[in-house]
Image 1 (cartoon, helix red, strand yellow):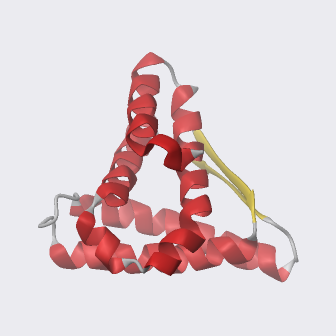
Image 2 (image 1 turned 90 degrees about the vertical axis):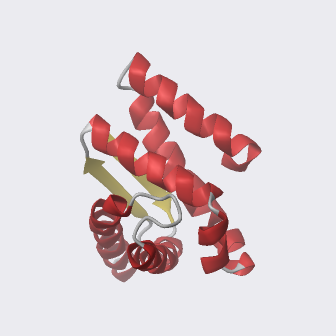
Length: 142
């Protein structure tokens, strides 16, 4: 399945990837002690790196950032579940300043929406999971 991300400001995506990398490093450091699967770190790191590189390229060309990633549906669910856990984790909230959370909320929700939209296109099982994630975020996703 394809995850279509963007368009958004290349600078916004670069800033988001810096914050996300820091969170991934923290998750690796606590090794599952906060209820977030540390196996998420590597696949998220690959996506973050790809998005960061794409955002750098877009910024150099004075374009908006866009990305299309091909991911297996089960991996997309795994990654989205981990992102959802991070968004609800009091520990992760301590690693992010209020200013960062506010500044990157739009980019984060764009990423959630890209995953849920792609999962919705996969059929009923994936749709149910996507709906659960959207419901867990409530009005934050709007």
